[in-house]
Image 1 (cartoon, rainbow, N blue to C red):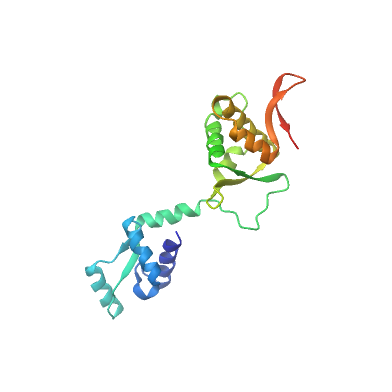
Image 2 (cartoon, rainbow, N blue to C red):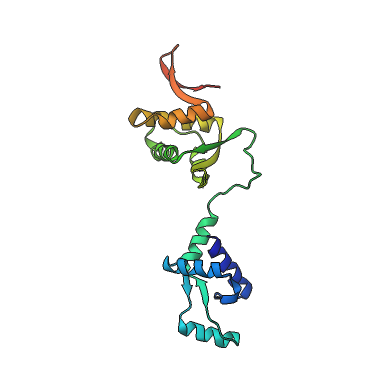
Length: 194
């Protein structure tokens, strides 16, 4: 993605789509060749190089530009919510990190909203959509209110009935919220472990 951003920025600065040999480093040129094999960069053929040489008034040995698909990939990447390092949860929220299997279970729960008798908490679907994936830590990151965290715990409880308890146990261990039977009433209810 960094290469695509560089090609976009250099091309905009030059006021043309083509980025020339001396506009980028050798490593960036090599990365552009790789991106060309993925359909994200067009490397100039001989005819384009000749036209660019005439336009530039000098010999152009190499040039590349973004494909329409690369432009779309950059637009798509901007829609991913990536909080700044100093972003803090609001006063009534907490930062929550979910493993991919937990996010899958939560998305499945949200997809069933219209069929459920205990609906998800208000705003949970938006928080799940706005979550971002931290590749280095292999987790989805979002902020949840207490009500939304309780709703997530319920989703993991439902998942545990049919599949595994791992997601519910991890959430209970890390965030202290779990769905379990209240021994005084015999009914399921949320509980805080800490």
